[in-house]
Amino acid sequence: MSSTAVTWIVIGVIIVLVLWIITIYNGLVAMRQRVNQAFSDIDVQTKQRHDLIPNLVETVKGYAGHERGTLEAVVQARNAAVAAQSGGVAAQAAAENFQELQSQLSDIENKIAAARRFFNNAVQEYNTGIQQFPAVLLAGPLGFTPRDFFDVGVEERKVLDQAPQVKF
Image 1: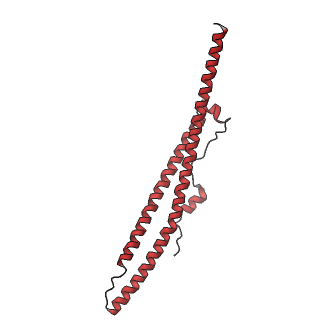
Image 2: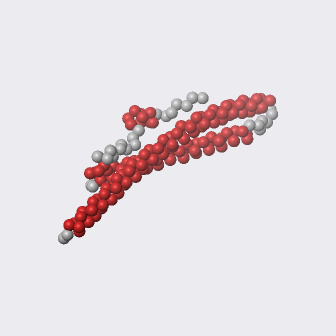
């Protein structure tokens, strides 16, 4: 073979090698981004839950106060032998509002669980990707380190096992 042909073969091999490295690197970056996005999704869902719970508590407080007022009105009406029908519409509206907030909370809890599962799946794919050959040859030197699965931890798990304290 002539030296020109050997030169072109060497250049071709180098180009293929560089394209192969770029492809591996881009795949690792994409997996790392999926992990980061999945973790952010968990943050978004927990923020929504954090914002919803005080509304739920306030609705229950209002409903309880209304029920107390209605009960007192019924007792007074009964004592006065007058039928009391006021408050029925407001009580129904409060109950519907409470049910709607309760439904939203349940929906958010389901979304949080799904986001955690998605995150753990993304972490599994990423960790596998950086440990497989030939990506393992590039992952470490390029700063791709394993990520931990979502775990609430021992102390947080103790808190989650207890019922939340709600004060009226």
